[in-house]
Length: 468
Ligand code: ADP
Image (cartoon, rainbow, N blue to C red; front, side, top):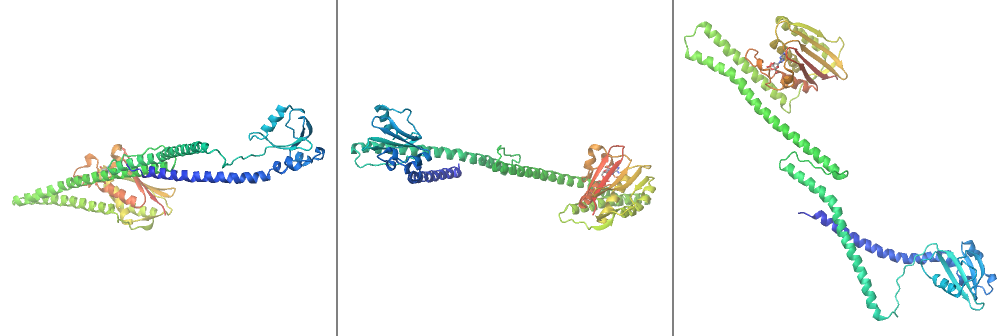
């Protein structure tokens, strides 16, 4: 397995370990220097017992010491506190020899909260004790004395080397463990991501990643999942369109087969039966003609539809007052409706509403809708065509109260070759492409078309188109 990240982490931590050790050494040196600087600035080092000493202790200038928070005591040869000013750490006025010796010992130790400076005046035989509360204490120093017994050197050096080795081993171990721990947080999500990417590459489009992280990996996971979902959708769309294409070819062959079979059959009759009567001839010729028209219509519609589906299909839009346009169109439908005995009603506003419209294509939309209404509904059907504004759009309602379409297949009606079963006969002469073409034209205008219908409840097409 590739361990580049893991090794990279280890190398970085080892480097960090070396750098921090060097910084540690440097700090050690700096502290020694700081110790000197601090001790020079501390007030207790400026007022030592030695510097204040006077033979007559009454003359000792204790004021500067007490002003700086310290104290001055004089202990005479009988270990009595003969004089005291300011801070006093002696609990009694008279000490025993043992107590004073103890004090002298303790005053040198490091861990106490007071700084003592003690000086003995051998002329007058008294001790001068100057006390300051400890402000800060840094006692850090490496000391080496040449006179140290050489037999002990080996042991001491051995101990120091062992301590240093122990320190290095401990630090190296924790560096390795820590680098592993931190690399896990990177390597694990990466591994999960690459596993899912591999599954995706191998065709498993359901592959997703679940890292349960809020960081950048979480972001990467979301992007990956969104990408995988898009690929999955596109693949299923592609499969679907492949299915549709196959179905289309089947439908075309089926719908072309019937008229062509009739044409071939009747043409054969003509050839095999030269003694046909005039009436028979003209009836057969009509069948051949009608079927040729049907086949031709089918091919023309198919051509139109595939043109609309091609990527370079563009409509030729012009600025049109849709109310005026619809009124003129309606004028051409009236005769058709009257011929088949339909009632009609139109509601188009008087004002001007402008739209960008490809007139030739929009004519086709209304011709198809009118042709269908007339084709599939019987005498006495009522038709309503109305137009109204809705926000930035206009809506055109094209409604009849005829036989309608079962609701469950209403939405499929806009797909090529989808027809209500009973209508799949040669009488209606439809190609099953009319509504598919209508929808393509409306969508190319930036609009949409919906069908509300049910069996025996008529059809209501509502077309929405954007205003300028
Ligand atoms: P066709 O060439 O068959 O008319 P369309 O795509 O135009 O193809 O219509 C699809 C089917 O929808 C038709 O076959 C018909 O069954 C049904 N249809 C369309 N319009 C109406 C309508 N106004 N009333 C009843 N059925 C309709």
